[in-house]
Image 1 (cartoon, protein in one colour):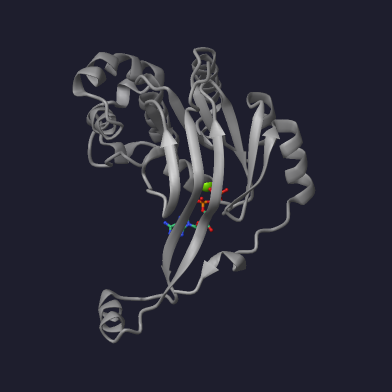
Image 2 (cartoon, rainbow, N blue to C red; image 1 turned 30 degrees about the vertical axis):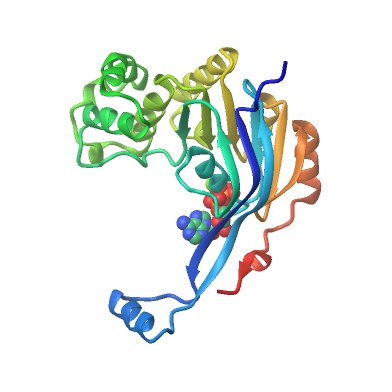
Length: 257
Ligand SMILES: Nc1ncnc2c1ncn2[C@@H]1O[C@H](COP(=O)(O)OP(=O)(O)OP(=O)(O)O)[C@@H](O)[C@H]1O
Ligand SMILES: [Mg+2]
């Protein structure tokens, strides 16, 4: 019997459109647009990316700053639609990326739990059922009715991680999350991730912490300048990345606009 992979990228290309110069004001933008002086360059954040992740697999994604790792997770989360190619994700996704996005600083912690749950596509009833567990895990009970803008960075991260990992999900998309929060919260995050793995969850794990990648992931994928350089057993791919890790050159990724 064959089962379909949980995540399937087929020739995914992601273009960001950038103006070819800095435009200081809206007025300046309007003038340049009207006089047709406004030009764009297309920047290829992902180029022809093809890979699959099986259900239950924890796949590490490694690569230099700007390689396209977060972009890949945004595409998998459905936040960005690929410019070309196809990304198929089978199951309920909990994106734990750019912690704090999907939160409103003016709302209280309590309100944000429901707000964020709605963004994750979870019903109010599910969020009500999970509420106590979320607050307990975040250890923010004393702050839960205060506006989020009064939280520290780590406190926002705690709330975001608690919400994302308490709702039911089949797939976690983790972008450097193991490095936020203090030591004790970091350990509890790791326990949660381990439990999710044991229960058969699928994970894409982006991290610059290569020992963590080797510990948690059997397989890894190395992105370089938006392209897949290697995919295979994590120790091998980490070795190849070390051997071939050169500073990124962004030149080859611009397309004339
Ligand atoms: N919204 C955007 N508009 C234009 N360019 C962007 C945008 N987001 C990312 N990029 C560009 O796309 C490239 C890939 O960015 P991405 O955030 O995916 O890299 P990354 O691998 O996650 O890097 P890091 O390790 O620093 O987190 C970068 O060169 C970045 O400048
Ligand atoms: Mg990133």
